Amino acid sequence: MTSPRVPRPRARRVIRPAKAPASVPPPLTGVWAPTDTRLDRPDLFPLPSGAGPEDVAVEPDGCVVAGGDDGRIWRWRAGARPGDPPSLVADTGGRPLGIEVDSRDGSLVVCDGYRGLLRVTRDGRVEELAREAAGRPILVCDNSTIGADGTVYFSDSSNRYPLHAWKRDIAEHRPNGRLLAYRPGTGRAEVVADGLYFPNGVALTPDGGALLVAETTTHRLLRVPLAAGDPVELVDLPAYPDNISAVGDGTYWVALPSPRVPIAERLLPYPGMRRAALLLPEVLQPKPKRYGLVALVGADGTVLRTLHGPSGRYRMITGVRQAGGELWLGSLVERAVARVSL
Image (cartoon, rainbow, N blue to C red; front, top):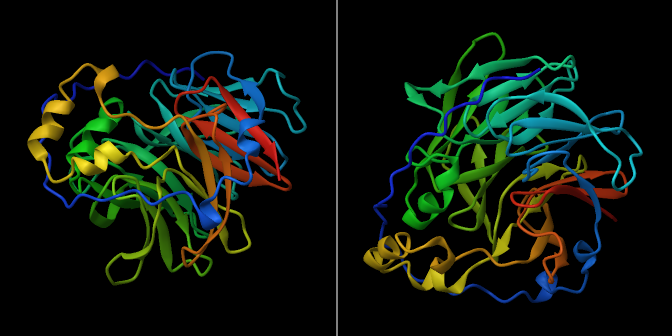
């Protein structure tokens, strides 16, 4: 059940930022207006150890699963109440990020930020599925979705910076990421799309012919066809998107860790200033806002509903999953999984 600790790779300290046009973050008005602030009143389910339950999955029997930065994956029983302790599922030895339930056998497909694509069986065994694709290591295995035939589509967010240096990749503003596919029986991953700006959340469209993909760096949602054709921008968002989860009715929840940061966008035309900013002590660097935000979107990118937490009671929301009339939330920094009623 426990795996050896995976060494954290060293990260380049000096970035090679690309020059890009400055932009102005749009205001949170209209469908983005903070009229529903229920994210500031969540029920909390603390992790017994570690922090940062980046994603959350709900199993068919109603159990809730999440993993922390210490490598451990936890399961709360169906009907758990706030504060109820979870049971230990497995320890990957790395850093679990996106978690999906494989409906074929009930196993968990785990994107581990340091180990690549994993499968965790019902009895807690951790199996490696893929650590490289097309001759390149999977550096930041981030989020996934599973097709009807068992194919796992997942994001490799950066080919330059390991997970703990994700801010450097975003500040660099280069297309360092790719989408990959692991097909059962092949024992390897292949490239679906390359040249993406920190691709993060991944979900299949209702017809199974394309992927809905969140590009964190460019704050947009893309439609990436699986057969042929180039990615198409569906919507430019007023916040940075992270994980995506399908509701099952043709709509999707998108986790948004932070509204866009004005100073970061004003510095886009000035690569030298961005390089210098990343050399400052972390407390002086541009940082995400303390704000809770998720959005419900259609398959065409239309924003249907937004939920807010202006006080940041539960911040840096990176995972979101609907189960019946409840919404489960994960965070990159909090020490608990959160739940709000819909």
